[in-house]
Image 1 (tube, rainbow, N blue to C red):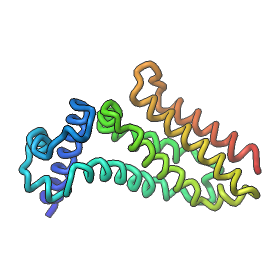
Image 2 (cartoon, rainbow, N blue to C red):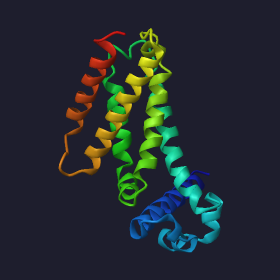
Image 3 (spheres, one colour):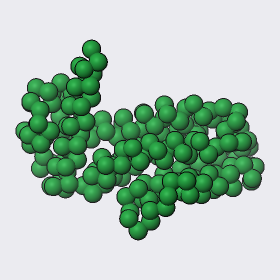
Image 4 (tube, one colour):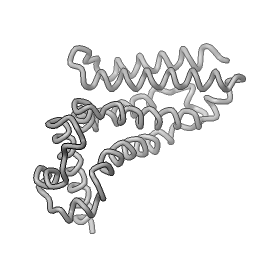
Length: 192
């Protein structure tokens, strides 16, 4: 059973990377065919259809999985200690994005980065919004939503930009600490 799961995961990843490579080549999802994905991924057409019904499902699945995995990963930080020690949350966020860097860069270069970024931002926003320790310190919930959206959009984009832009290349510990300090400034030091 383990080897079947490994094959399933390997084939799905091969489809995704082939899709990303073809998006990079063509820059347009409409120019990609399933036959090309199958050829680049070195799988059978039946294997493709055992994972996806169409090419559109591939990109939606990539973004959706990014968001879902990230949200599950970050849920463990929904505790009373979060405001006291939020650094591990941002370390985990950075490490997750770094682990998926190759696929993200290919999709970004092919013009699909904004879609993936949105899934990531939505997952981070949702995980932080669901933290009563964070949300309950605000009297004005509209202000909380604004601050949270502002912080999440900025911090996620900074990490993604840092991962793909060779001009930035701030090391992991430094960027995570800077994001954590901004979090403390917005959500801890200036209680609403």
